[in-house]
Length: 595
Image (cartoon, rainbow, N blue to C red; front, top):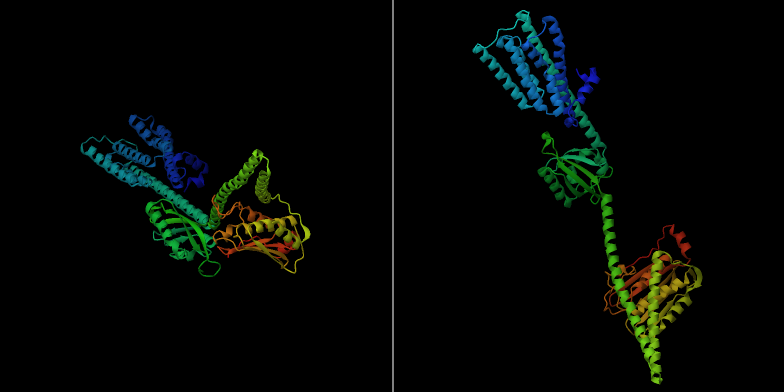
């Protein structure tokens, strides 16, 4: 019978007296509450007997008063436990107190022949409530010493005359044995209640943890030190795609990628050996539906494992496994982004260094020749020389203007402020004008342009100014990186509703490792100061940006010491037509292709 069922208010009061140090342990709370309640109720019962004794026998003498105080002493022991939480010490004090009380009462009522001597048998039973071998052993020792002490007192003739309680001997024996049996029964009932509460706590805890493990999105497993699975939660369906029973024994191990199995076993062994939490990442084969294991269907998983603290399973390891595929993908994305950022930063550094070199060269020429002009004397020979200086200043100024325009165009394209104004225009005149513009550069290097215009050329819808700039940049690059006396080939045609412009040279070419990065802002193949060809690397970047704005595409094919071909595709019908056709799945994104 439990106080909880019959006196819930009283049970709550006793539970409130439990020391805070054990509140987090339901089993310890039950033991402390049982000890406190039994000792306080026993003391209160003793207090209730005092008025009856006074009514029957009158005022007690000193010995009787001492006995009554002793009977009430369990209340003080209960308060000691309530204030300190020292359960074993309280039980040891209670056992010693009971032995002393029984011994004192036996001395007063006949020694070893006392009707109360049967209470010595109760002492080990009460000590059993402590669930401590030391307390039980101490109780047996105290009881044996007390019995030997009683025998010694009798043997030495020091035993006082038995007190006359007014009852015959048979009734006193019946009372002594009966009360001892009743107390022992109360102790047994307390043991039962504690055992029942402990069992309920354990079952509730087991249900709670099982409920948590079975409803958790992660997989919870229990392993032997060799990795064998002893238990797997229902999370196996969500994580691995198979039932929990198929992960038992070596089922989980067999699903781990072969190259990752040593890491798995090492983590399990480390957890079993050291007792500390261990984390390991490995790839698991996810089963889909009723299909068996299929190579290649692997995902990244993370397992955290540690040794169980339970004494009954101290050689087992509990592990929690979760799918970290998304995290791995994010890590890979961040790694690639970091590498790209580092490359871009390095490219910008080289770009700024080379840009300062490119700017300094024409500025030095402009300043130097202008100073010579200002300090020169008049005369026929000087006039010819001044004219040469002026031409050099003009060329340097045009070079500076070209650099500044490239920087401004690239900046406007990157910031999205470069506005495309589409119009209908004929392609042939645009190509002819661009070839005429670069003709002086060709003459200086003894080069020529070979044009190949298709017969199907017609009007297109695009930004004429941007198309001119695309073609001029491609022609300038081809001239710059070609040897003197070589040819530049320009092709123009209509293919599948796209205008195809191609510029081919027979120059130095580009290596395969550098080819994919051409067209990236700030990228130059040769970033050194003593490079053989001038330039900032903005030409192809501007071309790529303008092609992007037209929703077109760009291809680059090249081979070292053979030459380079750059092909640009622009939609004939303009950007709006591209946007409508792209809904059907057509793709015209800018792309780079190596030879």
